[in-house]
Image 1 (cartoon, rainbow, N blue to C red):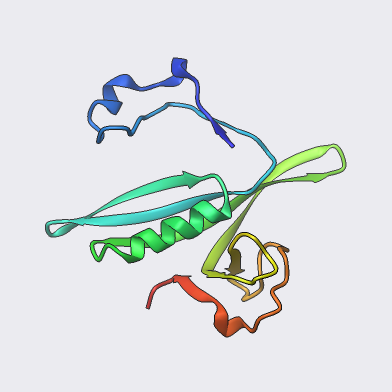
Image 2: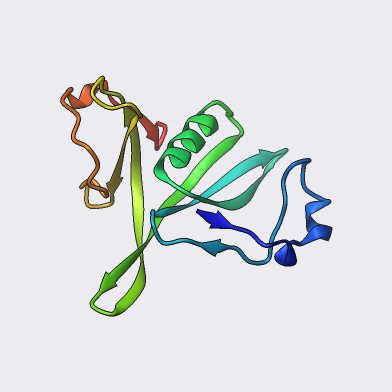
Length: 144
């Protein structure tokens, strides 16, 4: 979960953004789930404007990727998974590059199945294993 505090709001900046979008100078992250940093760009005339969004879970990531696919002037440049790890009493952040995002469904599970593939070609998270073959999955990122 991403937590915001009104004391950290950048009200002047928020006025420059579209309605319903706000800016903060700081947010708090709870450590229960991995987060995703998505660097993307939008085409504005002849230039590309780059941005990075912080998403709260893999379902938000899959929805973001699917939405970008519907806009030809948008392009995802890079995705990283940010997760909190513990080793003894030490806690630290681990960043993994996400090279592929896939989504699929299985009647056994209520929610869509999200598969994230790292740069070594291996799945990143250990979610439920689908019983259906991999060809039932749709690739959301990268779009070729």
